[in-house]
Image (tube, rainbow, N blue to C red; front, side, top):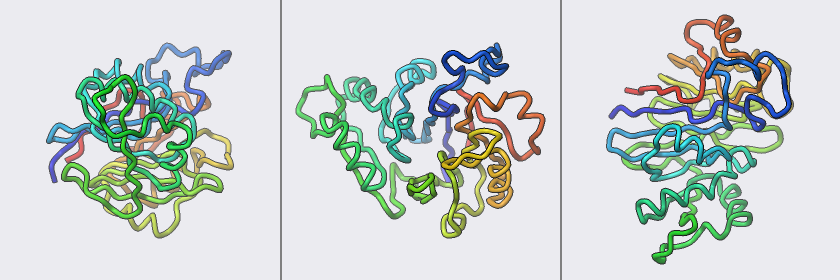
Length: 257
């Protein structure tokens, strides 16, 4: 399989870290690995295409920080604000390359996007001052730029949302449970990016203890924890983890062969 590179654009939860008005150890930390923008990642294929996972409200900042040259497609996990509301910043990439960007996700997610951001879903008309996007609802595995992309249904509280598997990489954010049928789709992974909200339990996310249980069930060669609140300080958490599990951070680049 051709190699590709994943960059964690944002490893934080909906509030980001530092949290506004907070004076905890993590929020006051000078360690850049404790500076977490809202959750998103970017996959750069060997063939040159860039696949974005979610459009964080911090997308403009993330794009500038990582010098992202283009976005060729977006995979949406779900439509909560911290994963969607940077959608307007896709217009920069539409303008740069005079291209329509396909967005993939659950049918219900794309219907929600059409309701809230309908102005962005248009066929190209030579006017690039707004995003020019095309909704591509998916349910089954599909081909994208020569790679097989498999939607992974997971629970996020009472909602069913998607994670995604691309080759031997899987990305699972905002997870409260992973059904058995989905666990079967996660066998033989090299890399897993996995939700890990905080230390205490939460009704719509797995906490640290639950994340470690799922990581050990899935048995990826390497698991990176993402979507973390300020409850989790980078160095302290890293010291607690076994060798096959690590702490994700903004800007981390992972090579997948």
